[in-house]
Image 1 (cartoon, rainbow, N blue to C red):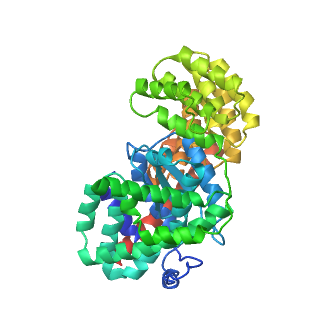
Image 2: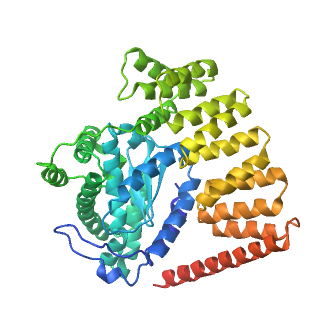
Length: 488
């Protein structure tokens, strides 16, 4: 990840971070009141968007609608249980084998694929998300800035950059930390341990109210601690950015002790997502061998269906389409019901040159899974592959009526309009995709191209002009806020 652009975004961020927590965990000071007038949630979101521009450009960014959909469904189930807090969240995955997750201003929460695979139950994965959600809802970055004071913003910046860098490179993280004042950095690290305890306490409540096994938090963190002792200087990244102490583990244990045991069954999607990620690891041949061995030994690790699904994914990756089709047939025999099976079946049809078959499968699946975005994306792409862009446009229009903030669907709509030769609509749709991703200058550029397209009517040009004025004003406002933030 590029640190210099991140640093610039965070420099702005520490001048304008968000509002304080609505409540404070037992035994911790309330540092939010003084910051309330200075830090707005809207600005916190914009800071997060700025950093996300860099993260989306990172080669590790995982652009997989099914993994993203699952993480957001799980994350929103948890965040809806944050009492008294209204906060938008966006969850995403990075293809990284290290065990790490991190939260950023504005409700953005990243999860490494290595952590998803290391979780032995859905409750364990949920416990990490609940912890990160609590960092956001309790506005820990804003409170850190408030405690440091304006005179120590540089030191806090160095710490924040170090935390982000540590997700994949401890050496970069150490260099970022050394760029600040040693004592100030240590003070902030010490204070962050208070934040960790607070996130544990709020996170446990979120986890329990969302219906998960709260023991998943202590079991996962205890395993992380043992891993850290085993590997010493090569501890999991999560331990470097989230200091884990014996005191924290004891505090978790005390809060869990005496609570009634609740057995929670993992969802099928949890198992399928993990199988899909595992099928993408290492060489394709190794992945096939691993799943074949597990099925032969009946080592299902929770789900036989997930093992067949993982093997099918690995076989496709290895170019063995006939064998993959056989595994798909086994999933049908097992009567596995999941939108992930339907999208995989459609992808198989496309690889076999049967675009019409893929369209038929996805059209049948859409009414059964109306809220599953990957089904809708797959249908648009299958219609384009089948040479039916006019039908694809109708799907994008219907979907955007229900989900107007779907940047990916706006992008697919732009692609479809381009195939239809409708330049104004193409640039207009692409502008909305960019705007939703926080890429406002790129959105402005697209709208300016739409103005010059020469193929729109008066009404369409008026809409383009109006939207262009809105985005230019947003650019001007953000530039003004950036200038004010640097002067503080």
